[in-house]
Length: 333
Image (cartoon, rainbow, N blue to C red; front, side, top):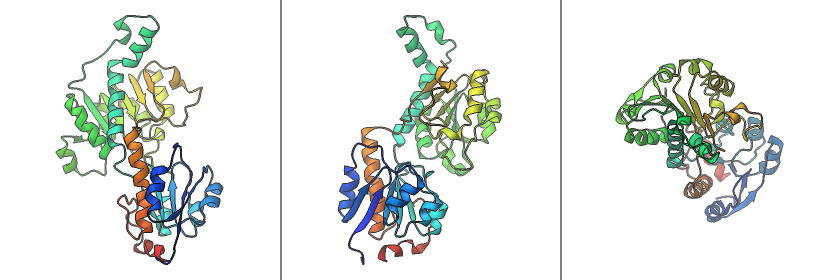
């Protein structure tokens, strides 16, 4: 290597410790800088001369990327890369990494937990009992789970894991994902449908689409109008995939039975959000990803992406696979 020490900047983080990241990167001898950026200008100031960037929520926009003089790799905590302008990074020969197998069990477990809580009215009954109202009738109607249809919006790794868990409980699974080959769905015993057909058929809908321009608001008024009145919608992906205005209207008008939401359009949820006052809505604070094991694994792998690139290799978790072949040559410069 022509450069003795690389600089790696963590643009922002919500973790108590960055010890796992430091441990990985110390092996290749980097200058490790951790900051808490919120704006483009703050990211540019902190990372303009960085060789590698680790990112959580701070915006890595085209403007930011155009002001990075040495950057070879940007690695993001998580599966989604919606904080990064991937096209701009690719144009500038910057490798983008994520962690595609992160929290697969955690999110699929959490989605199924929300589904079960909706189906069995667990939260509603808990609140009733704690308010000294001992009467099962507050939960009516409850329907048998076995034989019902679970519709998956997205059929990547997490919903594939969820499909197997749901099938063990006797649910039939259908899915909408225009990018998944039929043979993959067939192996999972999952029927592929168009989006509105899925909304018509499903008793439970679990959302797993990534947040990109084409998926923003993809579940809207048209889809809620197609759903059964007994249907529940579960979201453990990103809040804006569902048009929240349409969701609130559907719940208020009784078009669907309820929702289990780990994510909302604006986080943290605003105090005047009507969802907060609905007994048929379960709200969690974007926690589906979390377990102690998943967090440690994520932190290590996100740093390994950076270490791999700065050592002259493509990372295991390469997101922008069409990045120019010249990307790695930047490491030598």
